[in-house]
Image (cartoon, rainbow, N blue to C red; front, side, top):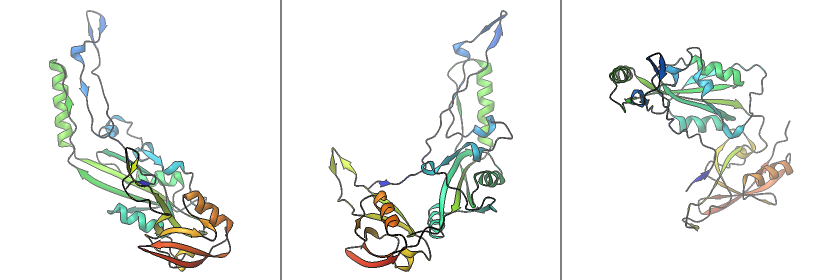
Length: 275
């Protein structure tokens, strides 16, 4: 069942480079037999081909949902954390009242983590989480001709690539949110279809993926995995319905209905007022 939620999914890049043309009989000729086509896996040589001063964490940054989210502070003391479990960290950060601004992903040789911190400061992030994982990926240049010079260049490049360890670099950038009106992070689950026919039953409401600690939702004992069905008189069928409901009932105590397993649970929640 696919989730209607923004996910960062970078497809491997394919780069092609050609050997420089050589001077023959005072004319500049580009021989097809002199072409050396290089197929790279997942941007492995991006660091090697880029300027040594370039910050790959900045170059490979992708904002989440086009968000302009920043720290509430004009000069945040951005913190860098080295982490291992991305899924657990995402939930922890959401529950602690942060939201992801965006992420950077690339594969290269060793890159200083301080560059991720620097980019986090440029973004005005409160926290940067960095993940580094060694990978067995080897980059090979495929020779499509019999040119001896081209063969030697390819062999030298392949030898260097084999001997140089590669690392998957991944960083996420987080900003603290204002005091939440409700305090939940949600997704809308949409059944997969085949030839226009749904392969599963529709999931009613909005599925909660995290509840912010000490928020109105947490105090109302709404938990991760619940499906929000209704707030006040507002039936919740999509995220816009939830935004409309919390805006409408801000500062009020209203009834809430959630689906928890096979049971519909009714409770009340005292929504905050946006400060």
